[in-house]
Length: 447
Ligand SMILES: N#[N+]C[C@@H]1[C@@H](O)[C@H](O)[C@@H](O)[C@@H]2O[C@H]12
Image (cartoon, rainbow, N blue to C red; front, top):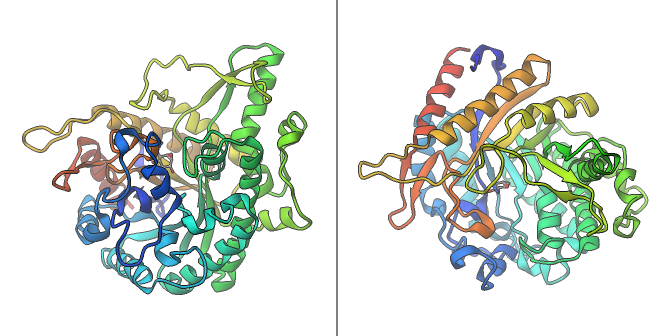
C-alpha cells in the first residue's frame, strides 16, 4: 500500500492541534476572554455545555506531551498561538506571561528536535475585538497586524514556519453565516466581508513575517474538498461549480492573484464583499506554501431553496466517520492534483487530516481504533499518489495529536492519535498512534 520512499527526504511528519482545543487554563496568567469562551458559555451552543476551560490541560502538561511526541518519533508539530494570551484586550497592553508561556513551549519542542509550525489565528479572537465588530470590522485587520508583529518579534528567532490563518472558511461562514461557531452570527453577507478581512489580514501578516526574516516560510491553511455534481444535469453541474467557489476558489483565487470568483458573485452579487483599492494586491502577496486541511468531499444538486441554488446531497459512502462525514480518500488526491494544476503552490503541507470514531479505552489502557488507522493509511496513499505525479507535498500533520475540544461537538468527538482520559488527564496512545509512530520512524529512518 504505502511506499515510504516516494515521500521526500525533507518530509515533515507530525500532528496538529489548536490552542483553544487543548490548552485549558482559560483564566490563568492574564489570558483574556476569547469569542470561543463566550460562545461555549452560552447555553445550547456546545454539546453537553463543554468548553475549553480545562480541555487537555496542555498549558500545564506540554512538557509531558512533547516527551510523548518525541517518543512517537514525529519531527514536526503544528500548534496555534492564543491571541488572548498575548493581547488580552486584542490590542495595546501585552501580557508578558502569555509570551513567556509560548517561549517555554517552543523551547521544549526544539529541545526534542521537533520543528514547530505556528498558526497565528485558529479562531480564538479576543472578545474585546468582537465587541468592536470583530472580523466584520476592517479595523480588526490592523489589530491582527499588531498581534502578528508582537508574536513574530518574540518567537521569530526559533519559529521559522508560519501559518497566518486556519480555515478562514470556517471562521467566516460557520462563525458568521451559519452561526454554529463563534461568534454565532447568521448573516451570509457579513460572512463574506469577514472572509475578505481574514484574507486581507493574511496578506498583511505575510509582509510582516517576510520583513522580519525573508528566510522564514509563511502560508495559509485552507479547508478544501471536491464539489461533485449529484447528476449530469446542467443545473446540478452549475450548482457544484458554485459550491466549489463558495468553499474553495473564494480563497484560492484571490490568494493566487485572480480576485474573487465570478461564478459565485455574479450569482449572488448581494453577498459580494466590499473591496478597497489595493486589497487584492495585498491578499495575493506571494507565500511559500499552501496548507491544506482535508476531511471529505461534497455532492451538490440544484435547489430553489436558497440564493446560492445549491444543496448538499448525502454521499453514498459506504464508510462514514462518527461526524457522519463520508470517508473519501480519493478526494485528497483530487484536491492536490487540482491545486497543483490550477495554482501550482511552491510547496504544500497537509496541515490537517484525520477522523473521529467512537473510541473505547480498555481496562488495560488500549484503544483499538483500526478505522482511524485505515483512514490515515488511505489518505497517506492519496498523498503518495499525488507526490508520484509531481505535486510538491512536503508534510502531513495528522489531526490530531490529542483528543481535544471539538468546537460545537465538545469532547464527545475524539480525533486524537492519543486518547485523553479527561477526568484523570492521563494520555493513552491509540493503536492508530502506534501505527503512525512506526510509519514515521521507518520513513525518517529510511532517509
Ligand atoms: N471538525 N473537525 C476537526 C478539525 C477541527 O478540530 C480543527 O480545529 C479545524 O481546523 C478543522 O475542522 C477540522
